[in-house]
Each structure stands twice: as structure tokens, then as C-alpha cells.
Length: 312
Image (cartoon, rainbow, N blue to C red; front, side, top):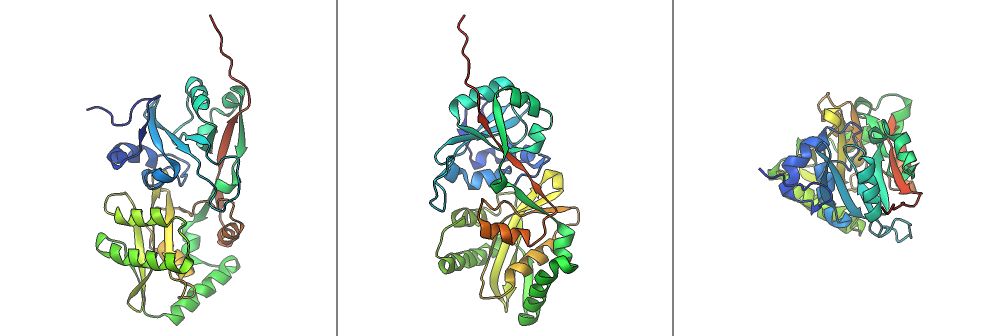
């Protein structure tokens, strides 16, 4: 059987046909980077113009283009080509070749640098922490219990929600319940007056039975009021929350969803990854109030030395 992902230097657009080949390898990556899942890549394939190639040892190389900043702020990365190496750093020859056709190396996980940081530096590549893209990591049990002074305000909001809306319920998200989740999504978009990640959120609901994701839908007084979903990462140690939408007319519903979903996850998930803040200071503050136990760090690499071509 011919491998559907072509060997480097050939690339193809990311499609659903590639899921069975890409998903198993990506789910085993040790860091738990939120973007490095098949769903994460596929759902944002149009936004970043993702294409994929097969690297050595059945690893993957992803090529993309950084779109203009959502806030209209000029960034040096806008419309620049980047490449991702989710599974491992590439050998020197491939890395140098990638820098000939791409502007920078994005979202480099720490595991990719563990054995090759010095080598990469010797190749003339400068590495820098990309704080705006760090994933926030939380202990699942802490989010489920909300115990102690650190979580006092969150626990009060959850208790107030439970008291105000005693008729509430959480159900596992199933294909039959997707229309209700989509209704919540549309109402959320109307109330917010913005698109944001709504296109990808709609598509992941529509493909719920196809993509390897799981989630829950939440009801208040018998009506759908919120939903969230994500997927397993890092060999089942981490669960990443990709989308979370709720109607804010129900005060405390986001805190309730966060706590209830964490409590309902299987205990083998040690951590919950709630993704990055993308430099949004309000979002950063909100994520910090949940007391992350750490961050999944990501780095950016840029070429600092010119390539030397030797003629024989």
C-alpha cells in the first residue's frame, strides 16, 4: 500500500484521508503540545494553509503560512512561511533545506531540543522561547476539587451556580446531541458579535463522529447551555481542551463546566492542557487564575547565519 503522506521534500494538503496515518504517531508525542494533534492541524488547515510531508523515522513535517494578526496588530510573522516538526527535530540537511523555503521554525517542543539543542545552535539557528504560545498545564484533580484558598473564588462561583440553577446536568457529547451544541455555538457567536475560532468549532462538532475527540454538553433547566471538547495527548497523560462555549446569561457556567468536566474525565489523565493565550493579556490573566502547575514550552527558531554554497 502506498503511503498517503509523501516523503520529504514533497508536501500534500492535510485531509481526512491522512487521519489514520497521522493520528497514532501524533498522539504519542511526549510534550502534549495542543497544536500537535491531527484534529488540531486539520481544523486549522485553511487558516494556516497546512501541508504535510513525511520525515525520517515516520515523523512529520508541517508547512504553513502565518495569517494576519486577529487584532489587526502588525507582527513580523504575518504572512511568513513557517514549518513545524511535531515528532522530532529534523537532521541538519533537511533543516537547512527547510530554511531555504520557510522563514522560521515554529512551536518547537522541548523534546525536540533535548538531544539536539547544541547541534541546532551550531547550524546557525537562534532559538527563543515563544511565551505567547506556551500551553497552560493544570493538574486534573485540582480543577476537579477546587480545594483550598487558591481556588476559593472559583469554588464560590461553582457553588453559586449550583444553587442558582439546581436543575443542571452534564451529558457526554454524542452525535445525537451535536445539533444542540451547534445551537449554543450560534447563539454564543451572536452574543459575542465575533467569529474568533467559531469556524473551527463548528467543523469539529460536525465531524465529531469522525475525529478522535470527546466532550460534554451541559444543560440548565433542560436547555443546552454550554459544551466543551478536546482529546487525549502524550500517551494519555494529558487531556487538551480545544473548544469551550457557553451562554453567559448563566452566571458561573464557565467555572462549572471547567470543574464538572475535569471531575468527569478518567483518572488516568493527570493533566489538563488549556492551550495558549496568544499574547492576549485578558486571557492570560484568566488562565493564571486557575493556578497552572506548569507550562508546555514552545520555541521559535530563526536562521542567523547565511547559507554557504560550495562550488566544485
